Image 1 (spheres, rainbow, N blue to C red):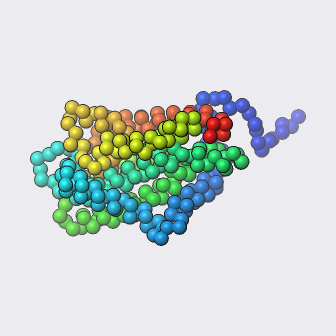
Image 2 (image 1 turned 90 degrees about the vertical axis):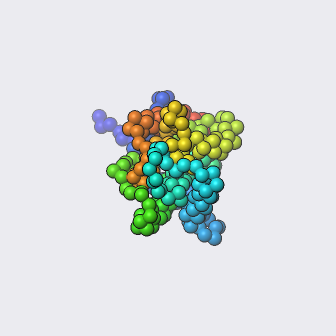
Image 3 (image 1 turned 180 degrees about the horizontal axis):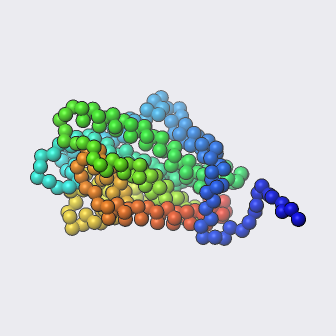
Length: 290
């Protein structure tokens, strides 16, 4: 007897981790549409449009340079040294700003994925992971624009010849750093979005929590500012190895520890799987609580 083939199979999903990658691939066109929607809506009815992706980090970098660099005179070195090393403060702050900006923006947007898309999710079926993936990719477009701006300014300083910075061999880690940043941002955002469907108070704490997290990360200061006795605490922060390695790659001077970088990847993967498990459990019943 010939076995029938069905286009749609309805089955119980009681597994701890029901992640269907093939299904996500089939919905790649929907991901593209959501990415387009999110990117366009972000700059819709603005005079400067996507130029804000450049203006915002530039203004933030200028403020950081004036306040933390000139007034507070915080170190821009990740490793204490007696040498008179010249690394442009503007580039130092911009490197941290574009990485942190992507992380915080993606976390914030992904944290609201259930609430922001509840209307469409309640009317039609599609894999719910489509929305956080689309959010991370739409923000990645802004990151690419900011990264290109950073590289142009880097060349401007490098060709000027009044700096000690140079590309280091760690530049080969750049794709891994970007991939880790994407996964970590999406993981934290997905965890928060899964919890906020039931505990709305967490949504109010996201912005405040990210601000505290930023100052616990060497974005506006070098790692050398932290006493060596407690540096290990800062290095357990998974965002820290990403930012300091990013700076080391472009400045040729800084701090890199394979041990803490590997721990950062381990924490990222752990958070990613925790996020998938929580998301998988919540997506089945979130319409009853949102």
